[in-house]
Image 1 (cartoon, helix red, strand yellow):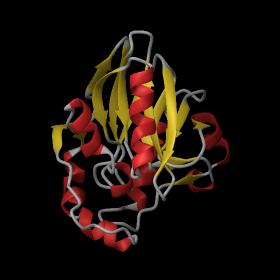
Image 2: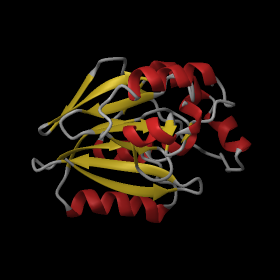
Image 3: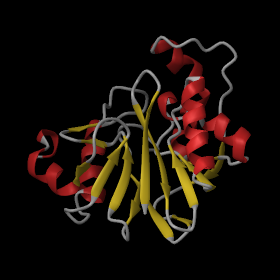
Image 4: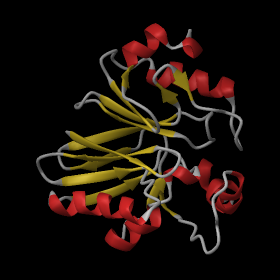
Amino acid sequence: MNVKIFEFNPISENTYIAYDETKECVIIDPGCFFPDEKVLLLDFILDNDLVVKHLLNTHLHFDHVFGNNFIYEQFKLETEANKGDEFLLEEMPTQLQMFGFKNEGAIIPKIGKYLKENDIVKFGKQQFVVFEVPGHSPGSLAFYNEKAGCVFVGDALFRGSVGRTDLAGGNHQQLIKGIKEKLLTLPKETVVYSGHGPLTTIGDEIKSNFYLQ
């Protein structure tokens, strides 16, 4: 499986396109905000003749959903996310204002399919197993591809750090518990794709992440 990484919007959010030789792909957390970012995302898909099968969100904080409506307009794919984060979409104008974004005329994306623990997302020759890892947000999800040896964790886990829990519905103890039970039990060589910042591995985080000792 191939993974294309884009760093989008003023909060430097990681948007991912995962695809394989079948040309089928999924988009994870489309954070494209500026017009040129949307063009970059679309051009990569079109230039590589990719067929987008799923629009996945690890969670629904505004910086991870900026591009959801754009993806719907282009490919008629609705958001797939956990119901526990649905309230964040309703509060999106407040979130935007809190972080200094103008929200005039903002179109709030909707969830088209609810994802929960142990659901399977298939595309091409790949499949993701869905883990619920709440704490950064109530509905935070991770997408694990055992065959490819990687996991997309959103803002639950970062290199040397964990997600903030001071936003609506956050819970630090719940987050740490979920990371240890759902993520740190994966093979140590598993590559971790986070919502912000560089890649890491499960083994590296077990060894050196201060918050998980």
